[in-house]
Image (cartoon, rainbow, N blue to C red; front, side, top):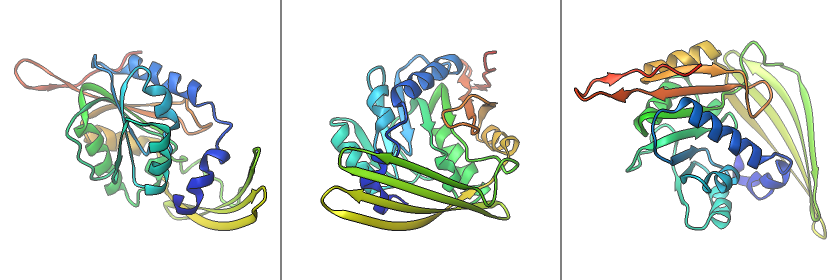
Length: 250
């Protein structure tokens, strides 16, 4: 979906307060995590806007399936490890204290099996006591077929307008996007895309996280209104080598 949008993505979401969101994520990681290190993997890192702030207190790694957005992230984050890979099957040579996956990136997966595999992969890359912070797609009960939304951003040289229309087929949502890009001195560009999303209840997502070996809970507080946040903590290992589940605080 980012092949054509990538050059304008930061213009479109420029109003987001990435500094505030990064501080909120760090607070949640400290509250729910049990490991003592400071390593952070952001899956679906996009153009690296969160990593720009997280790197101040963590050794960060970014991962995304889009070459186009990673190209932008590399310019923003010189020296940061950025990996082109699929969230379902990436394999890195280290584990992390925090694995985050934001902007409802898991909604792009095709099936519950993909979700189960992805959560297991997140757990595989967590240090014992580490925490996964995952922003889900819209709950099936809250999805509104027929909803129309308009977002516009105007900058010094680029103006971006995005109109979206939603529809639903069974367990999948479809959001039909139309983009109009205006570039000073270069005229207008229009393109469209349809982004599908997997509609899975919060309860089912928690079940899949638990099956992956994470102690899971759902928080209503969120970065995106109405999405909430899934928190999964990996168990710690006792001296006898047994994996001991961690009970979340609060």
